[in-house]
Length: 326
Ligand code: PMV
Image (cartoon, rainbow, N blue to C red; front, top):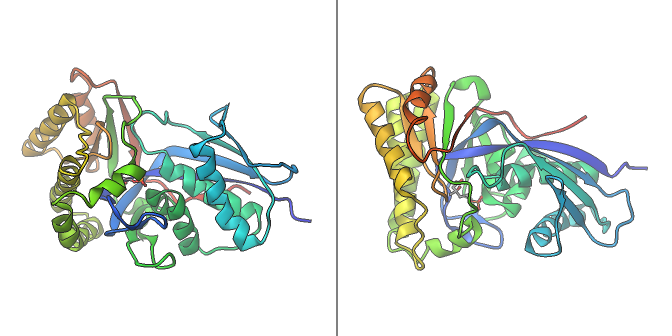
């Protein structure tokens, strides 16, 4: 008799080469590949319990029961993929906790859907490879595909469900980079990434972004493998700027930056000119991820902590793969 209950953990990740736009919104097949680093300590822990004979799925997120609506539907739909593979129609209770504030500008959908994928597959005893788990997580949130493998990760765009998955390109201990996240707003973003991806194609700049993505991916991959911070910093900032240019020129235009975002970008660039190994990257929000070379984080924190508008600085080094708790 199977236990039909399992718990899994996954870390958030920060993209160095970004994912923005799909060729297939339903399957979340991206227009181009992306590269990221898992963030140690910024974790979601999810238990999926099929044991109780529930009439419909239920979810308790950070201690609060989810009401009926789109968030619960997204979780149910995700578990449907695994139920289909297991040929098991049972409904589940999902209990999930994220140890960083989800409104704090660090993506929680990546760690959440990676953990949900592993826990659901384990609970229903569906044996999947890491590659298959990554592709499964992608169906819930594209960036979740990158939270399944550990360390430094590349998501290959692919043009089919099976071919669109992420794998590790370097292990956790390959390079001691630190992400110092400068949180300047805790408000939930006005336009979420699912909607943002569908707007991306309306920007006249998206075609150029897609055409030049393979080159940035290669430069970034090589810089990570060679631990070449200067080359890394240049391509990471370029890629973030290119993505935000697309966001700002779509229909509707999406402006995620606040004045303090620009102040922080300028401060980071000045620090680098002074020889401090740091570069910025920004997701679909105003907060600034400052990626620091080994030993640079204390200098970066000293420079950023007194900037007006900076509410909090969070630090994370490279994190491991998602895992099922024994
Ligand atoms: O996985 P999603 O749909 O939340 O998209 C993530 C989009 C960015 O964070 C802006 C970029 C990325 O690659 O993580």
